[in-house]
Image (tube, rainbow, N blue to C red; front, side, top):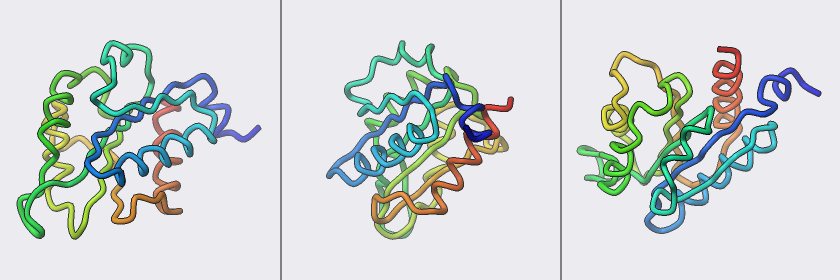
Length: 154
């Protein structure tokens, strides 16, 4: 058993997403499956189907949506994601939170705006993933590995 499996054994993660055409949902599934392969107990859900009370039983929050806005400026999280996320703000510590998005051209200030909605201070570091394709890359996997290693040791 790897050191990482020992650190993640029994840990629970929730992957929440808001998807418009399916690319973000696919990316969320890939994130969830990867975390599951690392030994976490993973719950995957669209925000429209999620009971936020279940957050009391999770160790990690991974949340995302597709990037809305103009092609180059004005990127922001979707209003449905913002409405849901305001309800769960502060329920999971920032150091146990990871944000993700899918996008066409750029993400711009999307992650800064997502942190603000979740009540996370701008100076607080929160890891993020972004994808044009909706597929998990090797770099994404390394970032997820770092996230669960750092979070599980704390």
